[in-house]
Image (cartoon, rainbow, N blue to C red):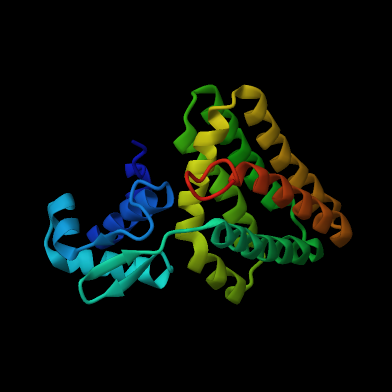
Length: 228
């Protein structure tokens, strides 16, 4: 069973760690929609007191993955509409951020993005889906941060935990399809870099649109029991 990567949990509180693991189990379908999970069960599962469990459940509730009720937390999960809407928000954030960067000198940013893509290629060679996924997320987050827009960054951070989990699952799916598919993913990141280098808003918008249209296809085969 896929577990949440321990390397991604550095400096995380116990409550955050529990939330990350439960989030993964909910999104990959290990914990089913409609199930009720109690504080006692979670505390027992993770060998902890109920205080960090409450923190974790509060977090998942704020993300819309569970609904807190008197007898426990009812799993709401993610359906196809939820996941598509998540990617709609990602598209809006990244389209705005990248077009905003058309007004800037992106030489330093492109150097940073190249180093991240180099790490993605290294992860591909070592068949390390977790590292590949993390660097993929870092690539997009670096662009969003470079746009230097506080409200856009705040919006990104509000969806980041679910995005990280979905990317972990989609990357696992991509790795199962072999090296050719992985090369195509890396090529898409180079296309984003070329769009940024052009500093033309219309070119950037088209690149981002095509990137997310293709990402949706992978998405639909990566979330067990959620998409068709």
